[in-house]
Amino acid sequence: MLFWLIYNDFMLILGIETSCDETAAAVVEVKKGRFLSRANTVLSQINIHKKYGGVVPEIAARKHVKNIIPVIDQTLKRARVSPKNIDRIAVTTGPGLMTSLLVGSQTAKTLAFAWNKKIVPVNHLKAHLYANFLHNKKVIFPVVALIVSGGHTELILMRNATSFKKIGQTIDDAAGEAFDKVAQLIGLSYPGGPALAKLALGGDATAFAFPRPMLDADNFDFSFSGLKTAVRYAVEKSPRLTSPLKKNLAASFQQASVDVLVAKTVRAATVYKAKMLMLAGGVAANVLLRDTVTREAKKIKRPLLIPDFIFCTDNAAMIAVAGYFEKPVDWDKIIVDPNLEI
Amino acid sequence: MSTRQTAYTTSGTETKALGKKFAGVLCGGDVVGLFGDLGAGKTTFVKGLAQGFGVRRVVKSPSFTLMNIHQTKHRGIKQLVHIDCYRLTNPNQLEEIGALEYFGRKDIVVIVEWAEKVKRLLPKKFLKVYFNIKKGDEREVRFG
Ligand SMILES: Nc1ncnc2c1ncn2[C@@H]1O[C@H](COP(=O)(O)OP(=O)(O)OP(=O)(O)O)[C@@H](O)[C@H]1O
Ligand SMILES: Nc1ncnc2c1ncn2[C@@H]1O[C@H](COP(=O)(O)OP(=O)(O)O)[C@@H](O)[C@H]1O
Ligand SMILES: [Mg+2]
Ligand SMILES: [Mg+2]
Image 1 (cartoon, rainbow over the protein chains, first blue to last red):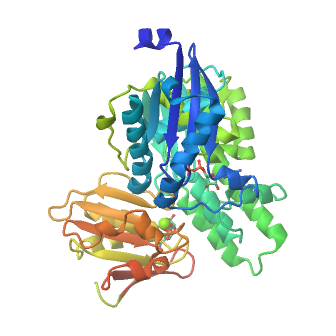
Image 2 (cartoon, each protein chain N blue to C red):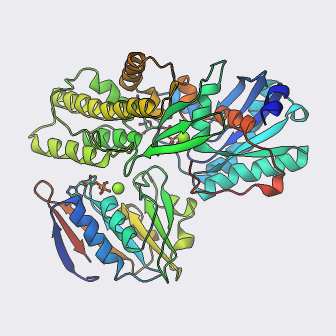
Image 3 (spheres, rainbow over the protein chains, first blue to last red):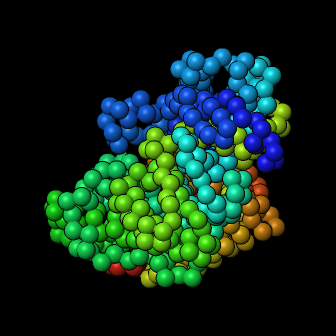
């Protein structure tokens, strides 16, 4: 494996991602173990430019069907790569919705058949971590990584580039989900995570003593549903949701979430003797989370990697990077698994 | 328990226990709709219900993933399909996520959070559980 990794020193990988809301494709160039995104297309990002953070995702496999070929076509053109130069195709096979996953995997199979290529089946969650390998970042193992997205909150131990062990996870709501739901409770429109973070800037994070769920528990699991409910109770107790009150609620909730996320990540890094910390997933865009992890990582003298924002949320470049590490197979060996775990 | 009964719980643990008990009255092919606001205890209830069926995996909120399918340790009921319509903006999306094919199957129980959003796509005689937040941690759980 190692031999192969070192000597296979130039590769072009086409990544395809349709596991959830985004239709995405990317071409990643691998050169001497370094990863460069040559083109990275995420369909919903076209709208994000219009009104940042205000996009209501479309949950429609039908949308994927309509968009997948144009997205791939555009990506290949922008990367200036012709199909014959693609070395392999990487596609998300789980976790995600069956109907959405099938669009990506069937497209990958069809292309692999027509172009005579091999396919690498990719775990979406592992791929979120591989986003940290993009653009010349050097990774030192063992790594303790926190995946924080809309659907997941997981602590992962990586002993090398292909070894993943889940050491903790949310037992109810994911962190991003809690941000969105609390945002709704204080009257922001869906998905309110980014808007809540903005609102929190002007608030007092000590105004409400929200719980830090599972902070002292003797494991690396998280829980956010109780925090959500605590905010609900605070809202109901207040006679009127004034603007300063909303800011304080937002700031206090954000602080509580970030406190637990960071404390447990840092504790895991110490316990598992990690040489590096990583952040991944959409909530990694949260500035308080980034700043706090950065500060705490410094305190324990561990380097920290956070992907560029465009590689934090769902994208296909991270799928392509994952495609470098896993074994390519024939198109007829590809099976999707909605419940795939790390 | 299945028709017109109301229970009161004062903690998440009690709501879980209620869910576990409810699992005992369900039959394969049942579709259960859960109604109630954010934080009312729907997912908590499903956690207990899953326990009742011997689901091993942690039952997490499917708000983002939309549908989680759990294997059970139950004789007749092999799968618990946990759907969450929180993010759906149109009832037809229930069909697009591939949920309908699980309805009415003899070896499957389907449970749907935010059922009000997709009522017209649920089977005619689906079971209903309503969650009401009372004072503090008290919840009224009504089976209708
Ligand atoms: N600045 C921010 N602060 C807090 N939350 C944020 C911020 N920016 C985005 N989020 C949240 O991140 C989540 C989106 O993350 P992401 O796009 O990674 O989810 P996803 O990839 O769809 O989920 P998954 O990978 O679990 O299927 C949303 O809940 C959103 O509100
Ligand atoms: N009596 C109760 N029943 C259910 N949950 C309760 C109760 N009291 C407090 N809680 C807490 O409220 C939260 C309910 O959240 P959750 O089950 O995710 O709600 P929903 O799925 O309806 O949004 C949990 O953290 C739970 O511990
Ligand atoms: Mg994702
Ligand atoms: Mg819920």
